[in-house]
Image (cartoon, rainbow, N blue to C red):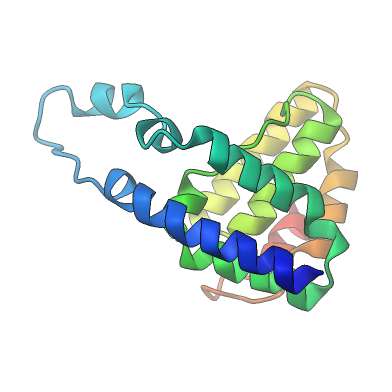
Length: 169
């Protein structure tokens, strides 16, 4: 079952990544006087390419199925997302981050992100997620423990693994 689902995800991820790449990697003229405002008000890449529905559906499906896979299969999915970085940068899901279950799904998305292109960004993001969730009364420790069990054990940058980041949360 995994192989056929993964093959569909791979084709769709590669197609969406191609469409998103020029948007995500567009140069920003930091000498323009309003560059920060423009950057903050530009549409999300999923909207800019007109594919939000497909991107959301893909990530909802991956997030919902991810935990049912074994460690090797999960790593294949993480690697697929790493190879399609414009898509991963544009990831969106329907889950409400303000609820425990929605927060948990967003953390699965962070597991998929596997520290992205810079582990410092991942550390800052997880710290911010923790603070916001704790203010809402979400049991972050138990969710982070669950994420550590399914996160990658590959140390991509020499700063520790994504599993380490969740364990040290």
